[in-house]
Amino acid sequence: MSKFDLSSDRVVLDYQELLEVALSAQGYAIKAVSERMDTIRKGHPSNIEGEWLLNDTHRLVKALTAVYYLTRGLDRPVINVVREDN
Figure 1 (spheres, rainbow, N blue to C red):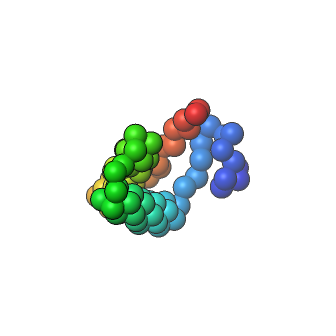
Figure 2: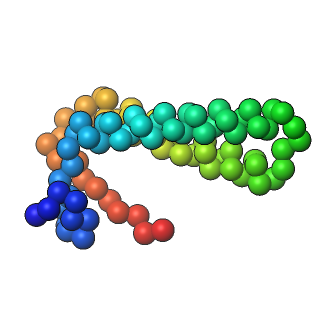
């Protein structure tokens, strides 16, 4: 089984790598929300800017949730991965 074979029923994930990715996503999301808020504060925001802020905030919440659970140590030998079909 390949480490990145996402068509498999089971995906092997390295805990440290997962945590690094989650922390990186958190950093990017914080930066995106901050930049979006700065843009909105400077002028009259449009509806699309409000929607972008909502999307950026949603990504931040997902990243924060991932970091929270990963740093709490889930005490599981295997991390189950559920693929979302967009």
